[in-house]
Length: 376
Image 1 (spheres, one colour):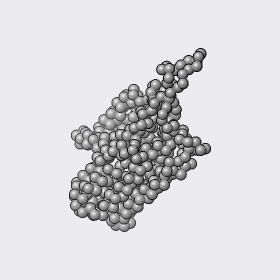
Image 2: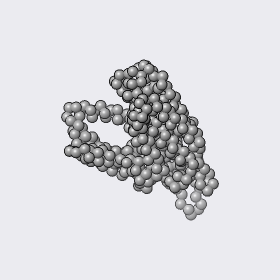
Image 3: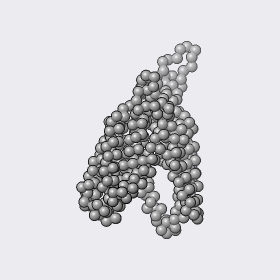
Image 4: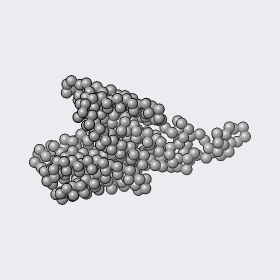
């Protein structure tokens, strides 16, 4: 459902900005979470859980905050997107512990109600701080500079400084001008579909491994469930490596970072066949954690680099169905493969092939030329 909501959310982010979308998201999420504490039937739980996830993913941790970062940053845009990418797994690791303590001592219903109240509280700082674009408050994106103006002719008014125009969209001096790609134009390019396919394959492969790594390590490597869960937790924490990928993306471009992440992920998955001890399992967890959780963030960087910020929300939102499709397929694919093959080895081969294909597609996904022969 988040894949269905994201394209709409992205278009609204471009048109109205994140300032009201994000507070609306916390209010609606808060209502769902608080109501979960009072459900009496399974179908009520399902409806509220699905609605909460469908709303929160694009509005609070997906396309809308990414659109905010793209609008406010130019020079350090990739690093800003990397920061957004690390908050979800890191905070999830913290919240799981805190909410588990509440659930054990006061019950799961109380835990959900506390989450709902916290979501309501977060609405206040979002409404006070968030803005649509820096130009609306007299600023330019980070790293951009004002365009210099010639001196005014006699009888003509000068700008406020006498030499520089007011901050407004498109008035960037000494910076490469981005073609204002529309979503329709982007969807007509070969690069978009190659990037979208990469996002689908990468998400499918990573989710397939992530959802099945614990039973794989228990059955194939002889680890205990606790040891295997520790490997999974380590991989999640190492999503902090997104900051390093953001730093690299500013220097070698997001495209080459995506390729490096896919190759590293493929190597770590191949290494799974050699894992037979706790030490080798943790080596896998380190390499896999540093590479597997990066594809979504790096893909968002590619979209920003290729298609600019004018309609980033609309274009980036159309990618979410591919990511959500990979997430849903990856969760069930492992179980289906295990039921057919009777082991997890075929599952590992499937994930390996998906990573390799994704790497091939990203090599082919060169930056598209602006429509009608416009230079960028």
